[in-house]
Image (cartoon, rainbow, N blue to C red; front, side, top):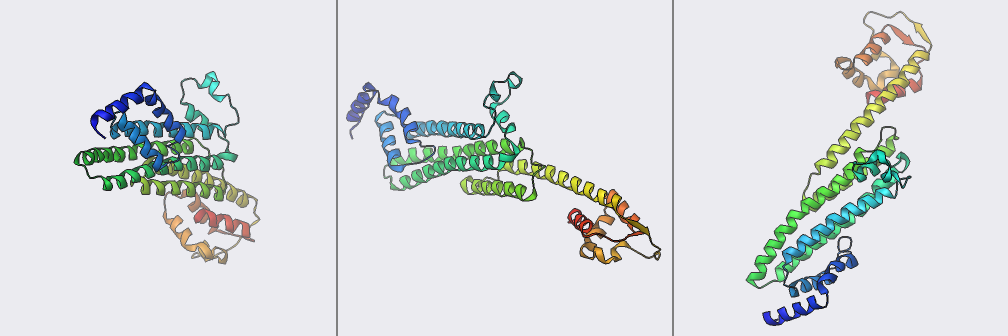
Length: 311
């Protein structure tokens, strides 16, 4: 199309308000959630008729993707908060609204909220991935030198925004993770959380070769807190068993070692490691005491608890 004709058609589009409807197209097509290559091509044509570059359109798209990530995360987490007016409380004035919502998600529905959030954000990531693939494929069809230059700039913009979009995604999930109390979860529940986060980290690696440091750090902190609480509970349980068990003084040889007992055969190597570790003072003290006395009988429950602690 000649430049004069293009300018006339562009002026006509301005006259009838087409420049305004382009912004509405993003909402109608929901480009940030479901990418449609055919409709996206028509949108590019409209931008071209308005004498706007692909680069400016990519900038606008990026804003829409970031907005979609923020709004979607907010809406998903908000749907799992029991009190709808928590954001209106004067106690929370000045605080980040999304962080406040994350802190208000109940333990019993946290996993559902996490899975739902990851699914919604994955759709946005997938849409942007399809957008990038579309541009890479369309670049191969271009024959004009000027178009090639613009396509290269567009490609650089897309790659630049790729990491920014993923950083926003992992920050939203990390915020939800760090504001949750997972210490009292059952082991299988905590493993489920690990699996969800691990799969999301894999998505980030496939999407933009990101190591997802924010997600890695958040799940590392939660894992430390969980196992600290887990071992504390097991030690308390062991203490109760030891205090309430029937004890009987038994003469033993000077060379006797508690590891010689048949009941401790299954974890002898672990106990040896704990004896040699100076940081395990409490358990080492227990072992030294057991070398002087013998439990009559050693219950299966107590052996199971010791096995959990030393595993």
